[in-house]
Structure formats: structure tokens, C-alpha cells
Length: 146
Image (tube, rainbow, N blue to C red; front, side):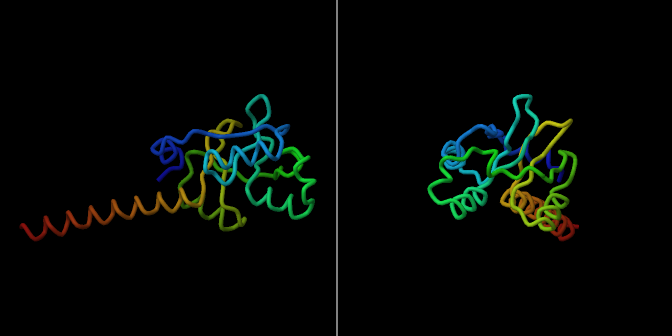
């Protein structure tokens, strides 16, 4: 299944923040929307980086309460691996596995159009398998009725 088709099917609404947002505001967005990461966008909608729960934990681990004084730009990952909406869920899974992360921004024409998580990939894989099972079941039933 293609990533763009999957994201359209689940009706994903992209949640993002700006590089100037406080770490507290970032944490609130992640919590409110039940997400583990989000893109950090520039004013033109281009991605400046990505920030995740892991980044917040690392910030507090390294700086203690001082992390509350930081901005998204201070903890975000700047060198971001991305994929396109025409790539497959399997390709996204391979990228995540190879690089050791759980969230992958989906970029088209230089702009973020979504973000796919490991959970999304597992759900997509499950749906594919359920469809395959149903097709095989139908084939067995049709063969029995001949």
C-alpha cells in the first residue's frame, strides 16, 4: 500500500510546531494529540526538523529543569530522513528500521504532507493481511462450490 493512500484513508491531520515554540508547548501538543513526534515547520511550511518524545526526555536528562527554558529548535533533529507519499509502507518500515526511529515525515514538493509512525505501519500491515485472508477465504469457498 502507498503511504499517501494510507494517510488519506485514516484522515490524518498534520500536527506541527514552530522552532520558536517552548518545550512546554511542544509537550502539550504531543500529549493533547496523542502523538509521539511532529515536524517543526518554518513559516513557509517547509520542515526545519522533527521533535519527538525521545528528544524531550533527552533534554530533561541532560539539562534537568533547565530544559523548560529551551525552544523546539534546541532539541529537534535537524537532519531528517523523509519519504514521499508514493512510497510503500514496506519502504517506510525499512527506513525506520535502518535508522532506528519510530516516526517518518512524508514530504511532497518540499512540504510536509503527513507523518507516519511505526504504529501506522503495523496497522496498515494488519489491514493488508486481513484483505489477503478474505480473498483466500473467498477462493476456498468458490472452489468448494464447484
